[in-house]
Image 1 (tube, rainbow, N blue to C red):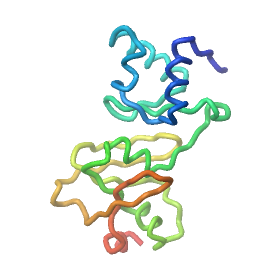
Image 2: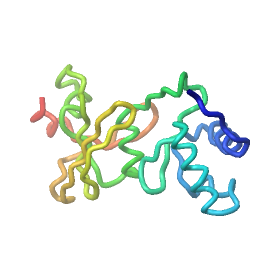
Image 3: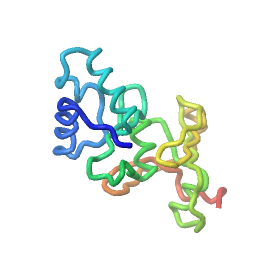
Length: 163
């Protein structure tokens, strides 16, 4: 069952959608609220209603109003890049091998070597496994673009060992 949105929720969701800003931070919406506490309450309500997803401490993903039945999918590489704030990570494993067309198998999980997190999360039915490594132990990586958004992935040579 769908829950309705309040006038204030529609107000700042509309501002974000008009700017096509689906990934946003707390600082970007702060001017819509009178206090931090009020902002926390509205963000909590929107998470319960399934309108936003929390990616990290301060970054959120807005599920567009145009999403049918509140079902929306974003490319996993873009999600990973936004979660890691575009630094200190590298997409590896079968996801990297698939990206370089070394294998045809669509990955069931996305391995991410990084310097901070070590956990497994599931967003949009996509399993993302964060594996903590030292900066010097991250594989050789390069920056690529998908749907106009940059992400960092293991080089083709590094990805051959997962093929």
